[in-house]
Image (cartoon, rainbow, N blue to C red):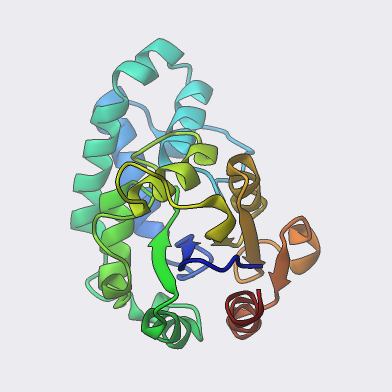
Length: 238
């Protein structure tokens, strides 16, 4: 799955891929931000759309539209919502999220971090300060460079995030090569964003979707152990 000539950029999702059950404080922070900025009670808004795999900005937009807020107003106050959400999350985030780390993830990241042919990065719908704090409190922060990745604070459309991450991982103004980039996630939207940028995707059924629902990926793992085997095959054998 890799092409000779340089390292492979691995773009990991956060919730459902690296962490499980760490979204409660995040959801509370976003709801508080919507109340602060728009005066709506997000708890009372009816929405049947799953947030899994969506960016924070997209989730906020869905809730606000359902509450009757105009698209123009949503656009005008998007930066305010992001800032308020990050402030609330910094206050609400538990001091220790190590119990939310999916089994096998620390060992997998350690193995990948030791390789000279791998660059570890992130593609997540989390606003960047939220995603970074989650990983820091979970003990996974050191695996991911501070100036890399694509986040929900970069674009509301998740399909734009892999390209953003590739540009940040590139050099001399040239984005990291698509043929040496792999998105790793747990939802169909992770697969979709990879396809939108023309890069490959490995999916792992550690989130809300099972392996059958993730078959559109280039490889599907039932758990982190199987994901490690898929990555090893991709990196070692091409």
